[in-house]
Amino acid sequence: MWSGPPQPDEGLQVSWRNVGSCKGHRESPGGLVEACTAEEAQGEESPAAAQLVVSRLRSSSMEIREKGSEFLKEELHKAQKELKLKDEECERLCRVREQLEQELEELTASLFEEAHKMVREANVKQAAAEKQLKEAWGKVDTALFAEFQAWRASPTLDKTCPFLERVYREDVGPCLDFTMQELSALVRAAVEDNTLTIEPVASQTVPTVKMAAVDCGSTNTCALSGLARTCRHRIRLGDSESHYYISPCSRARITAVCNFFTYTRYIQQGLVRQDVEPMFWEIMRLRKEMSLAKLGFFSQEA
Image 1 (cartoon, rainbow, N blue to C red):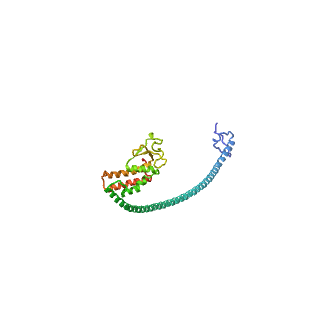
Image 2 (cartoon, rainbow, N blue to C red):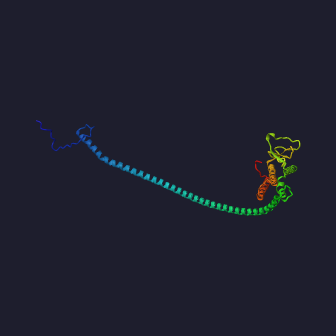
Image 3 (cartoon, rainbow, N blue to C red):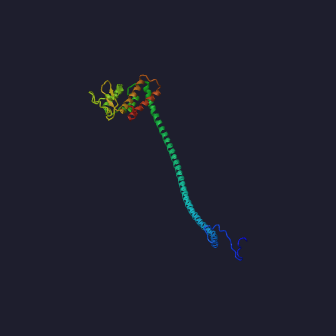
């Protein structure tokens, strides 16, 4: 009869263990038990090794962190040092700028003060000069006006009267005093007689040879001054067919004198309907034109 599984001998105890993880082993039960026991021992040693690895990793991490912290501190120190240098340079530049601005303000104020001083001095001098000139002109005008009034009361072209004698001596004579004395005398006589003609030169009809009666020169030389000048006008004396080429300066001088004589003739003929004072100031203006022409000041159109 079946009486169940065989019972182990008394006093013999066998420990049964799970050998599911020992898949590759096909030994006897005794060998299986020994392999599993070695694996358990190795499993018990793994936590210690893991802790050692973790400890080493932590140590390395701390070392890296410390080195990184030192590097950052050094870089921060350098950056702070450079920033401090830049701040010092900015402060220095600011001080320089403030100094320059202050010097510029002082210089500007000094220049303005000097300019105002010069203007004040110039105004004072100008006022003094104008006062002296006004006083001088007052004295001169009084004498001239008296002479003009006397002439206006009985107008004449006789140059021996005090008014015209002064004008001849101070204005007409110097204005018509050219280098070529002989021709100057002829021009003066023609102006006084009102027989002088001035006409423009046509470029296509300008002769470049001598005339039969007199040497009229050329368009490149003024017949009155004898200077090499471009002559755009020529004069004719009385009924003569001879022409003399004159420079713009010579023409301006002759024209200024002719304008004066024309106005005095109008007054003599009673064609000027004005009071004595406006007539006098027109005479003064014409005398001024003669003086300017004698000095070489004239319109470029001349």
